Image 1: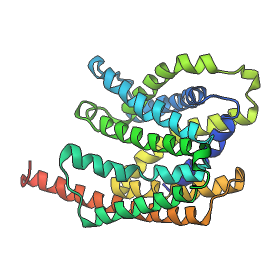
Image 2: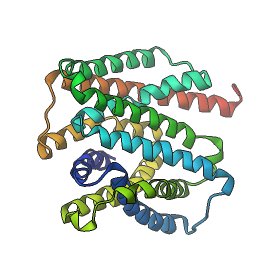
Image 3: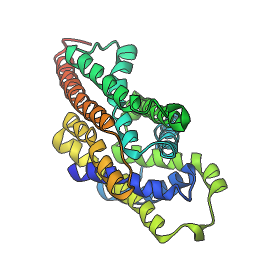
Image 4: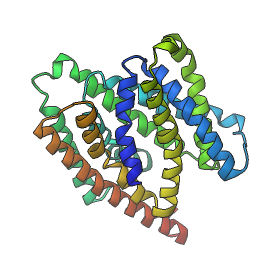
Length: 298
C-alpha cells in the first residue's frame, strides 16, 4: 500500500506531460485502454471466468463511468492547467469529508464529535491552501479550484453509486472491468475527435501512458484489493490520505512546482484531519455492522 501511494503520487507527472499534447479525453481513453488490457488478464487469472454483467445494470455502470472516470478525471486533468499538482491532491483530500456530510443527509448517520472537529480542521486547512492565493485568485487559478472541487463532488457520486445494492453482487474484477468498458465507450467519440496524429506522441509520453494505465489502473487495482483483504477498509483508506505528500515531492522534483509555506501548513492540516476522520468513521462503521449482525438495529 505504501508503494501504491507513492506510485499514485507519481501519476500526476506523466499525466501532466501527456496533457501537453493530448486533450483530457484522449489521455483518458489511452490510459484506460492500457488499464483494461491488464485488468482483463487479472480478472481471468484470479476469477477464472469472464462473466458479463446483467443488462439491467448497464445504466448504473454507465453512471459510474460518467462520474467516477469522465467527469472526475476531466476536472482533475483540466485543473492541472491552473494549479500545481500538489494543491490539487490536497483538495482531493476533501473527498472523505464530503462523504461524511452526504451520509448524514442520505442515511441520517450522525457524525460524532471527533468527526465534526476533524471536518472543521479540514475546512480550515482548505482555507489556508486557497487563502494564500487571494491576490491572484481572480487571474485564472479560481477556475482550477472550481475544477478540483468538481472532482471531489464527482468522486463522491461515484462512491455512492458503486456502493448501491444492484452492484454489490459483482466481484471487484467484474465491477472494475465493466466500468472501464463503459468509460471507454463513452469517451471514445470525444477522444478520437481530439486525438493528435500518433506520430506526435513521443516515446516518453507513450511510456507514461503505459505506466499510469498498467501500473496505476491495472496492477494498482490488484494491490488495492490485496490491501483491503489484508488490512481492512479503514487502514487502506488511511494510506490514500497521505498521497499529497508523495504528490508534492514528485511535483517539486520532476515538475519544478512550488507551493507557499501557508499552503504546506494547510496541506498538513488537511491530511491530519482526514486521517482522524477516516479512522473514526471506520470505527463507527464497524460498530454499526456489529450491531446489525446482533439484530440491535435495522
